[in-house]
Length: 275
Ligand SMILES: [Zn+2]
Image 1 (cartoon, rainbow, N blue to C red):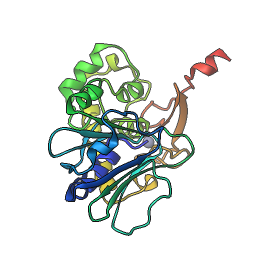
Image 2: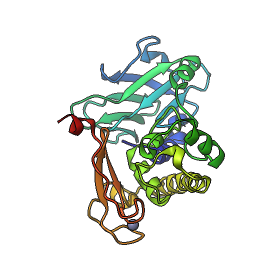
Image 3: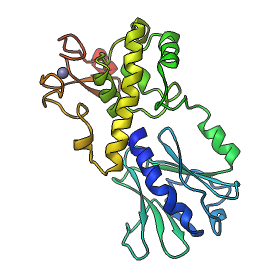
Image 4: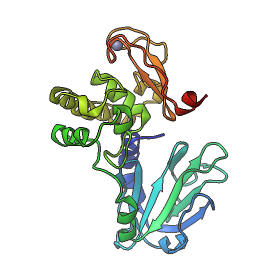
């Protein structure tokens, strides 16, 4: 799933083009993708987007008259593309917005499951839709992270992915961040020293910024990630083979030399305990 660096790179790429021309025709949209029916998508026709905004892993396209906001959540397989006039696009996009002059913004989704979502909302409704999200992960800071870690005891990998507490990190960047911070994915937040909290806060910024820079240059997953999805490959710090463990519904990648003091982590999937 695209996370903060990927979404922010897309936002920057789309910001100018989506606001260049008024919307000629909004739609069609796949019935499973469009989550709202009032106002109808056609309410966008003739209006102009102010640009692209981002909140956590979502993109927002507010209209320049301040009346509507198109909110897009790509989930795992959704992709947004801006097509020049005459450029060939997908046959059945999950959403298409055609601008005057013939350029298009299209949302596609790989696979048959439609999980990506599009909402057309008033600014107030958009705020309500996003109200559950915690502060943005980038620039979260050591003081705020110290407070969050002390609130309740949570395993770090799970805490970093909790969008209500800290927004924009998913499982891939949680792996990268925890590795850079040299902390175990299973470490309990309340047991961190202040020095470790500061290290984690610095790692959040450093890794998300590294990711954003790479994604803006068009780097793929293989080039961007150094730990995530790298089972058996050498750790870039110590050369130890990267390990993998299942946790909740996620797979965690980590270096047992850099992060867990040589200990190999055991699966903590509920289904395995019940077996
Ligand atoms: Zn290592």
